[in-house]
Length: 166
Image (cartoon, rainbow, N blue to C red; front, side, top):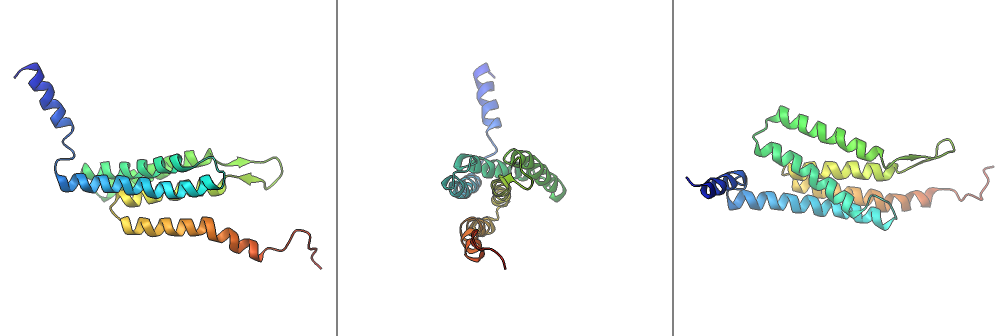
């Protein structure tokens, strides 16, 4: 076997994880959907002027999906998959912690909603990576409702600041 034949055989072997059309389609669909759903949540955050926007959320969802898909492709059992998910969630906690800022006055904290959104985006990515696309769509829908509708509901029930309690 010549050097070039060895190189070609090695390259073919290294890229053999997507070995049939059905599997390639499944992996591509999961990666695209995780990226899209993460992007929806990131777009909402970006529209509200938050630092963690579209690209951050897309990368978190895609990365989370890739971690579980890679483990699944390697034949990971339930125990191993559980450890992978635990590692992803623990790791995303560090990213989320970086979005939280404590103000100077007591009780002044910023970035908690953004951190929770990144955490949710990670969960959505994991869910898509596990092949639970409908559940991920539903979770994204609930997340968008929470981020968009709940603030309007809260503002309707809050007392105006200039109104003194009697």
